[in-house]
Image 1 (cartoon, rainbow, N blue to C red):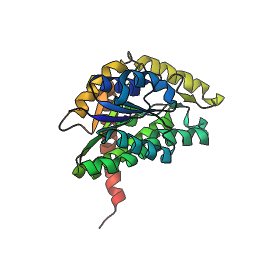
Image 2: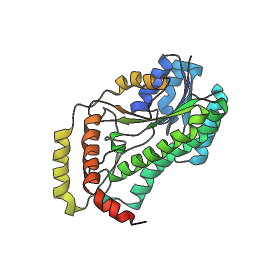
Image 3: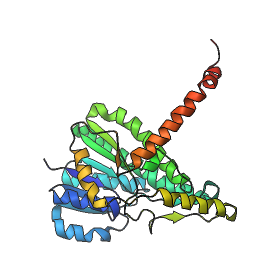
Image 4: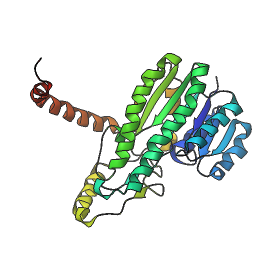
Length: 275
């Protein structure tokens, strides 16, 4: 049975790959981008099965109007993909207020507005699947992208709560946590804070360590088949890594957390107080 998708950030990267793959298998897609002209080729090729929508996900009213338009056009919404986002580079002290607000507005609030706009339609039809594009950076953290991590950690938390709240309506939620892929995430779509010279030595060392642990980037086109396995599953996962490498990062990180929590458990119990 064909599905109807609503995909944000469909002009490039994962969003474009998944839009094309869904259309190729016969599904319909409401594809959004800041510049709808970047979707003209898809509308020309796939005709009535694609609805190109110009959308800035930080515009809450615009988001609700776009989702309602998509539902009116196709009559239902089956898969909501919150893919729009970007990476903000900068050490924590280097972040300006605008850097912080813009990152959270897009990566967190944008996904929240789309989710809220879609939920009434999904509840009414008694089905649906919300895909939140998070990151390995949604469960672990590295220097120079602290506010990006903050946006994704927040998305992880709100989505885990959401999954419990909407399960009774037949709605699934999945957090997709990619590793490094050959997308434009760290390229022209990225933003950079003004560097503070005091951190130059640390920044250079962090870059060396990152280069040592960086593996061959994943192929965005290969991720489409994985997305289909998730959305077509009878019982889809709440979380899934995309790419070769995130599990090792997560395992090392969580083993370290557990070890520290256990080591300090006597202090934790002491903090509880006596009855």
